[in-house]
Length: 84
Image 1: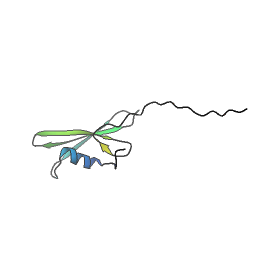
Image 2: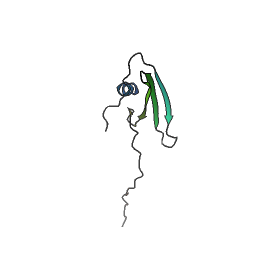
Image 3: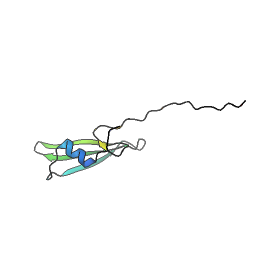
Image 4: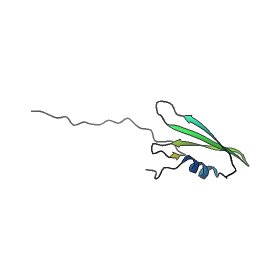
C-alpha cells in the first residue's frame, strides 16, 4: 500500500534534516500491550534548539510519520451446508 518499507534512519534523516555530526536521542514508546504497535520519538539538537518527531512502525516493517490504521471489527457470513 505504501511502497517499499523505509528504515527509521532514512525517515529521521529525511524529516529532521540530519547532518553527520548531529547526535540522535531515540526514545521508545508503546501504545499498549493489546494493540502491539510501537512508535519511537527521535530528537536532536540543532541551532534552534531540540527538534524531534514521532515515528510509527507499520505491519510491513517500515517506519512512517503517521500511525497505522486500526483494525476494525468485521462480520462475515459463512456458507452452511444443507443436507437433504
